Image (cartoon, rainbow, N blue to C red; front, side, top):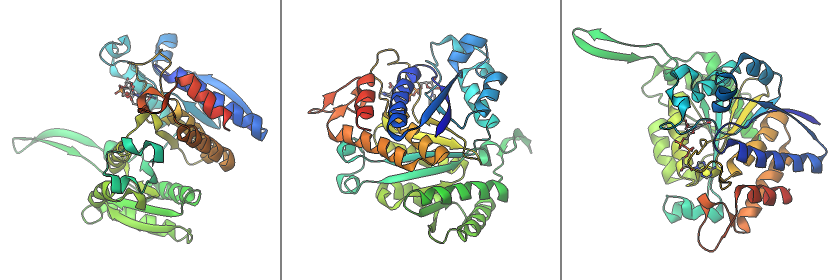
Length: 360
Ligand code: NAD
C-alpha cells in the first residue's frame, strides 16, 4: 500500500525526532511491503523564516492532499526567539491553531500508558502504579467554552466577564462515534465524562452519547462526573480505556493523565477529523533548551507514527509492531537522558531510533 504522508519537521528538537520516526516508518514499509510517500511541509518558526508567515495557504492546500500528517513540535524559546517579537497572529503557535482549524480536526487523542520499567517515574503510590494503566483521553477540540461567545462589560456598575459553553448534538455525535470506533480497536470500553448534574450542555452530551452507544452493543459505556474522574485518575487509573469528554474537561484531564505517566518524552497524540485524516505529533513542545544536541527522546514521535498507521491507514499490525519494538528497547534497558536512571544504558536520539527500527 502507498501512504501519502505530509511531514512537518517543525522547530527546536522537531527535525531530530521526526527523522527518527521516519527511520522507523521506513523499516515498517520494508518489512510489510508498503511505500511511504513523504511531502515536506513548513509550519511554525521554520515557515516564518522561509515565508514570513507561520502557515501559508499553499501549505494548507498541500496538507489537504495528504492522507495524514506527521509533525514534530513547533515554537521556540518564548523569551529569546525573535518569533515572539512578532504580533500574535504571526507567531509559530498561530500556525498550529490555523492548521487544526483548516483541517477541521475536532477530536484530540492522547494516550497515557505506563511502561513497567518506567513505573519509578510515576508519581502515584506503588500499590496503584504497579497495576499499570493504558488509557486514551479523547477530547473535543473545536467547541465548548473555548470557542463560545465571550465578553467583559459593566453590569450594574460591576465589571463582569461572561464565557459561553455551547455544544450542538452534531458536534457531540461525531466525536462520540470516533470514541466508540476507537474503543473497538482497544479494549471496548468508553467512559464518557461530563457534569450532567449541573450543566445543560452535559445533559445533552450524555443523551447523544447514549444514542450513539446503541450502535455499539459490543462496547461498554459508563458515564462519570468530571470531578469524580479527576479523583479516579489518581486513585484507580487502571479502570480507564477510552475517556470521552468535551474541550475544557479534556484539556485538564489529559494533562493530569500525562502527568501520572511521569515521562513527557514518551507521550504521543493525534488530532482527527471526520474522515480518516489525522495530524500526529508528540504531546511535548519543541524543547529549545536541548535542540541541536542530539539528546532528545524520539519515542513520543515514533509512537505518534504508530497511531497514524492505526487510525489513518488501519494498519493495526504495523502499529503494534512499533509499539512492541519501543517496549522491547525499554525492557532491554536503553534510555534517552530524560528517562535515564542508574543501571540503564544512556543513548542519544539517533541511536534510540536505530534500536527501535532494528526491532521492527
Ligand atoms: P517543552 O515540552 O518543549 O519542554 C519542557 C521540558 O521537557 C524541557 O526541559 C524539555 O527539554 C523537556 N522535553 C520536552 N520534550 C522532550 C523530549 N522529547 N526529550 C527530552 N526532553 C524533552 O515545553 P516548553 O519548554 O514549555 O515549550 C517550548 C516551546 O514548544 C514553546 O515555544 C511552546 O510554545 C512550544 N510548544 C509546542 C507544542 C506543539 O508543537 N504542539 C506543544 C507545547 C509547546
